Image (cartoon, rainbow over all chains, first blue to last red; front, top):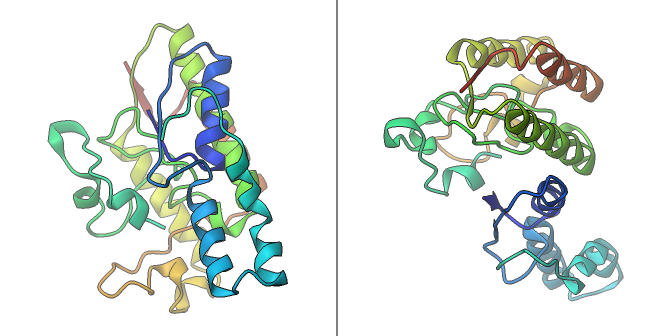
Length: 72
Length: 151
């Protein structure tokens, strides 16, 4: 059981799959990215999505992929 | 630094809550495991370098340590790994010892948990440096997971 689908949770899932182990990822947010995504969204909101906000939010691109085996 | 873990009802032996076990400040072995909580790994947890490094680097190192550990347990037909209370106490003392000569414990910072009213003031991250930490955690493995009870 992996709690959180941020960098750590996703890499852990990747490693466990490499060991042919079954794993479940649970994530409080509505997609992958974990706290990284949560903070990105907050920065974007605080900066009204201006250049600084967008630069900080590059990490938000994590949202655009999903990984087989990860569950929300 | 501890809030995320304490908000989850993580229960160890005898149904003990992690939040209760840490009521007087977090206790970990290598910032990665907790006595009384078998098979729980706290990635970049308190007592590891975590926020004093690039987080991705620390995450990378912890995840690989955990994956190697799980593989090792499987290879040796074991199913549980748990920090011994002695190893945990030793690690906590070491974390405090390396922080003591620095200014970190003197400041009202979130490194001390000072941002949360009523939170016990304990210096949270390992300040001995990433290379020293990697060496220490690899050394534990090289010595047959020293400080752990494996069953």
